[in-house]
Length: 378
Image (tube, rainbow, N blue to C red; front, side, top):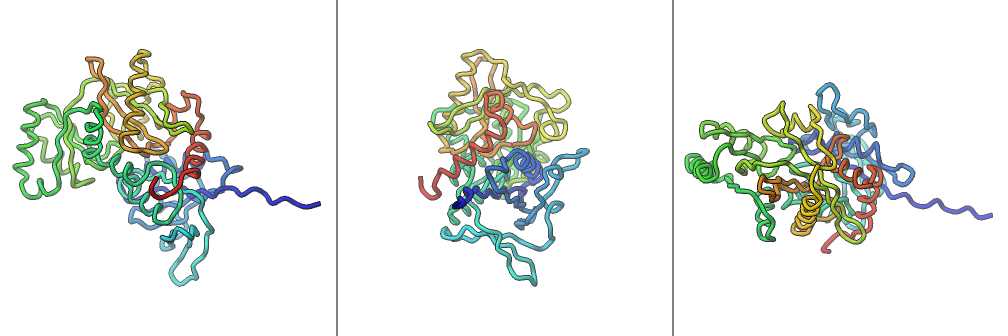
């Protein structure tokens, strides 16, 4: 009697943490993914990137990756060593990871079939990691280099939306050299913008997420502090006018026949916070309404716009699109998130759960889509 070789289980490297200000939220997201991934179907290797950029082997322990008593987790707390590093060779013929420590012989960790990057913000969600994986020839979940970069930069994201005829709200951009050469000129530019569109304004880092570094500014006196706060996260600053209306979100997921939209969700007014900021999202667990209480026509319209945004930026895999439903009944797209959160309270998985795609099925669909997609130009 001949024995059969057991089928190969794809090996998934879940990469999380990173150098951005969203490090802790990435760790929380990774914990949720590790908890849900089907271990009967996939081998899993957790790899954390520390705040200073070191790739580290970490414990496969989702319980230690959660927010506990308002304390945020970190890769440094999960890493098995303070010095060891994981290296991915930039060689499309070799997907084998290597682990090395000072004074020790490097240890082969085996090949990786697919990477599930759950990094948020710069150095992970912005095309940089995606470029490394393209050079290495390793398939990965989510958008490619261009879509990731555009999706991270609110300035160029809005320019792409406008070029495709998608409705965006008024905004102004302060580039690094503008502020460094002439703070007075940059300040006047914003005051003139406010004179046209009104106060208050939202001053944001152009390339950050999770509501990091955002300040609501009611008059010119608060501008300098708001700009400096945004520049702590990103030297490029975007200023947006207040859009009065309901905050609506919609998930997009790539299926075999193309991208589809989930049921939309609504972020209700947050009474304990000035706006839907980091504390409201992750610490105080503000609850969204899923599905959003919209008319059938409004639901169809926002789903169409979400898919149109996905296609405009040439996205792959997944996107969460955020909108304002204005008092005149028109939708305005605020932004897309090419790697939305997968925390237990995150809106993206909740919207798909309500649409008939469970959390484990969502993870599996994303991994299968990545495994079936080639690296390189496509």
